[in-house]
Image 1: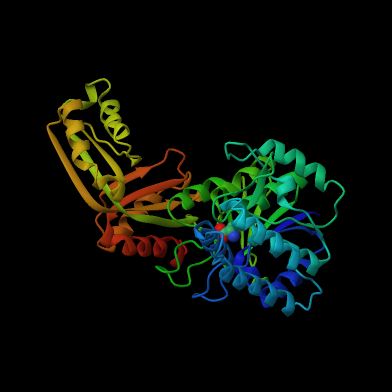
Image 2: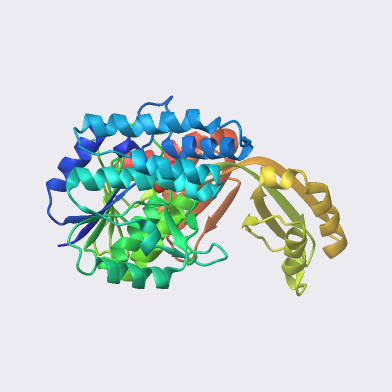
Length: 443
Ligand code: ASP
C-alpha cells in the first residue's frame, strides 16, 4: 500500500498540531509521501505564514537599499518556525535558510519565491521530525515559461526522482520553471501538489488532511449538524464546488482522476472520522437520494420576449453575442417558447447593464425585455437522483410548503443536478426545506 498524505496549514500551525500529524503518519506505514502546507492560523485572529510572506516581500520591494523594513516581518516569521522546532525538541537550525531568504528578498527575486518559502521551510522541519528524505519541489514540479503548469514533464521528473525513495517530504504549493525561477500554484495549491505526487507514485489513496471531516451535505451555517458525505464522485463534487462548497482546490482533481486514484478528505483533529471519499465512479448506493445541496446568491436575470422567437434562426446566438461582446459570462439560460432568460452574476453585470440592453434591442428587436436582481441559485446534486422517480416533485412540494416561490428550474440531462432559482431572501429557507425532505426525514 502506498498513500500520499497532504496536510493543510491549520494542521501544521504549531508544534502541537505537528505532533498530531506525526502520530497520524506513524500510525500507518503506507503513509510514505508527505506534502506539507505552510503554517496556517493558530486561532481565528492569527495570520497565515503565506500571508506574512506576501506582506514581507511587498515591504522588500518598497524598501530602498538603506532601510530594510521587511526585516521586522521576516523575524516574526522566523520566530514562528523556531517555536515549532523548539516545541518538537528538534536539533535543527534554519539560520542558513533564512540567510539565503534574506539575500534573495534584497535581490527581489520574486513574489512567488517569497510565498513558496512557507512550504519549503515547513517541509524541512517535517522531514527532520519524521526522519523522511526532503525533496525540494523546485526539483520535481515544472512550469512552462509562460507560467502554466507542465504536467507531463513534472510526472516524468517526479516518477523518476521518487522511484527508489521509500519515504519523502515534498513541500506543497510551488515548483520551478526550467531556468530555476520559482513559481507557485494559485492559493491553496498544496492540494494540487499532493495530487501530482499521488499520480506519479501511483498511490492507492491520496489523503488530504484538513480541519473538517470531509464534505457536508449542506453548509453548516445554514444547517447546524449537517450530515457528512461519505462518498462522492468527481462529477458531483465539481457541481457542488462550482456552486460554493469549498474544501479542496479545484485543480487537485485532475492528476488523480487521470490515474483513477481516490481522494480521502480527513480531519487532523478527529483522525477517527472516516471523512469523505472522492471517487471516479461507485456502485455504492448513496445514503440519501441527494448527495448535497448548496448554492449562491446575487444573480440577476435578463428576460427577452419576442413573438415567434423560436422560429427565428440564430435568435439565441444574437442575444448571447451581446453578452460576449460586453465580457459578461452567462450562468444559466432557461427558455420558453417565446422567451429566453439569461442568468448572470449581478456584480459583474451591473455596470454593463445599459450597454447590454441597448445591444439586445439592436440585435433582435424584442417585444419585451425585463431585468430582475437578487436571485439565488440552489443546486441539488446527487447521482442517486438518476432514474429516481419523484425527486423534482418532492423538491418543489417541499419548497411550496416552506412558502418559497420558485423563479426558475434547470435540470441537467445527466440527471445529476437540479438548479432552482429563488429570491435571495428565500435562499436559506430553500436549502433547509430540501435538506429536511431528503435527509432529516430520511426518505
Ligand atoms: N500556503 C498556501 C496558501 O495559503 C498554499 C496552501 O496552503 O495550499 O494558499
